[in-house]
Amino acid sequence: MLTTEEILTPFASGQLDFLMVTPSLILFPDPANSRLRSPSLAVGYILANVKKEGFNVKYIDMDACLITVEKLLRYIDENMPRLIGFTAVTTTVKAAAHIAGLIKKRYPEIPVCLGGIHATMIPRETLQEFPSFDFVVRGEGELVTPRILEYINKGKTDFSSIGGVITRDKDDMTSCLIEDLDSLPYPAWEEFDLFRYPGVDIHRTKRELPIITGRGCPFDCCFCCRPPGGKKVRYRSIESIINEIYRNMEEFEMEATFFADETFTMNKKIVGGVCKAILEKRLNKKMRWSCSTRVDMADYELFTLMKRAGCYDIFFGFESGDDKLLKLAGKKITIADMKNAVKIAKKSGIAVHGSFILGLPGETKETIEKPWKLAKELDIRGVSFPIAVPFPGTRLRTMAEKGEYGMRIISNNWDDYGKQYPGVMEQGELSVEKLLYIQQKSYLNHPIKVDWRWPEDALDRSKKTKINNETQ
Image (cartoon, rainbow, N blue to C red; front, side, top):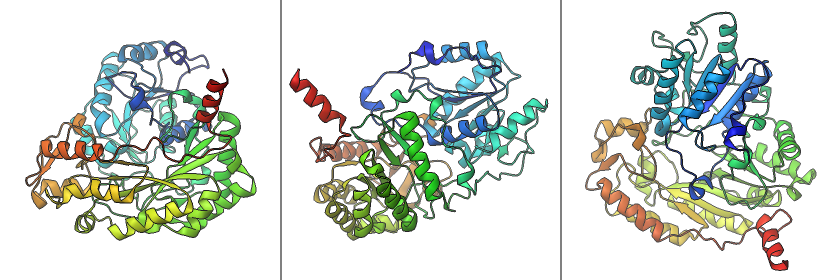
């Protein structure tokens, strides 16, 4: 693991063209919180494509690397990047805006932009709320960012003609969507201090890195942030996916992968092809992996193949313990689907974890107790109970703003828009205090099964540690 000083070593390869920042104002080394941290695929892809176009890049993850605002500003003083880009979700957008304001005050000539899901969902409103950003990059930024840098090299300061760039005086809100995913270079993991990203699950290997087989999701769940064009699913080739796995193993010592697709098993042909290629090349002996999918897409034959190819865990978004609420949320699944999917996964030998959202449209004091009781019945490895958040641009927020089902938004402070705490929406008799009480009760009734039957093979680092300790 690199020290802060090593991460902030002055840029020695000539002019720094692009500085990308994941912002944070509150830094604390919390092992419990950072245990589930994974390097950002979006950032990795953007950095890789900017480098491919011949520009020099630097990435600073302020939270993961414990970089203070003062140290970030000092790094900018010493390196003077041509372009600074922040990536932020709703809970970090205010931090990004504050830091951007400090940068603009010191260096008004440096363009500072914002990307990420918050800005993508409400670009015009974001620019109105936060004057410290010069413009927003909406949608997928891999192709947009090099164009901005090309304009800067030509001495241009107006980027409004670039597709995917949203400025205050621009009417066209079109976002950038990449059709040919195989044309993108693999994520630039060399720009990350990978020791600071343990992974998204307890994979028990040396290193986990995320991979996608495609982008987009055709479903319309009311609580999901679906960017423009995001319903269109685009897939990578099997060859590209397998080559990336090889590359991650050889260059970054990867021993576990999380397939970060929203619905991994939606295209059975792609999944089957990936699994068969993994088995043919015996990569399952060198890597284990996990994924996420929908309960109505559980398939025993496919799950069995996935298990043989190294899949050890599947995440399901259960979302509710009531069929009526599932229908109102647009989830288009049933409790019967959940039970069947968990049964199939267990039969195939794959562990299951999932989540239930508390406070979906139509939730009552009676229905809100159902998730933890259903989780008990399902008997899965782990489960989370996030509270419904009316994120900007979602159907849930529109419903709440209209007061449907008695929903009411009680805070527009983006700092509060976390899924676990503190709660920003109430419904009927379900106050925030009541929701938090039920959330705590749900977790207490379903603790994580730390003694779950984990894979025991040559990749199991915890087993090696135990053996080493016993022999000393």
